[in-house]
Length: 392
Image (cartoon, rainbow, N blue to C red; front, side, top):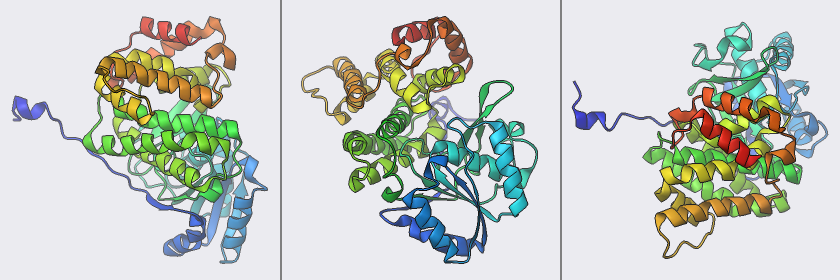
């Protein structure tokens, strides 16, 4: 039997099963990876905006020159649904693919993860909603993220919309869901529109920020989250201004991946909880919903973790000399508002199409999602009502 002292310090874990190749031209390592797997039939899931992109043309020529047979599926919407997954799976099965390659943002990578699960486990993707609902390792996946935001390439989850229930399903498996190989190449993000870069970059920052504030934060998650926030806060403005800025692009890709390594272990908080509810009822991109909700949820949580919020203030470049932890925490909230404003993020939910008549429903959904498991400050349904009204 454990002693009370031992019970106060429960055993935690931290792992990242993904091999990460990063740097300029990292995509040129693809043939080597496939040779290690003896894979010559590759099913490619491609963001539709990238069909004529330089990065896809490079990868296509590279693989063709190495004798790899490609089948390309690009019918992927921004918030992918189960019907898209099924269509991609059927194409992949027809090809009898030996491995998967995802080239795109989080939506593309999530569809690839879902296809990989179905290729080895069968059934439909809704069968696997929840935590570790499948036991067979998915088809091998290589992910080439072309946005610096979701970190889906290393995260243990994929999010797919159930079109009948009109809700987002999270399929989680810490060991099997991440890509086996992630290729973080600054050349892959150069064509991203500025507003997409801003939304994705804030999403990545929020992953690290909420993971750092989580009740389940550990010394290992702190290490990666602090560095992730530092990389992103220091590079997001120049990256959004110029996506071909190679050092800034690499910082953003690495910061995004670092944050995603952690939040699957620690969980997230009210920002993501609110954003998921917004996205379930309105066609607001996930990163944008996170960005709008961020300052309001951060202000609510600041009293629960003032010492950590003070650390965030420093990362954001706020002058906290001589301030108490509480005042420094308030400065962090101000820094978040400034960051969002600098990136052109609208300040209110009404500015992105949310209507007042759905605020209470979003509050109900947020409370029912039970992010209180991770969020540093307990949030009741009336609290969520107040948060949504403040954000509206």
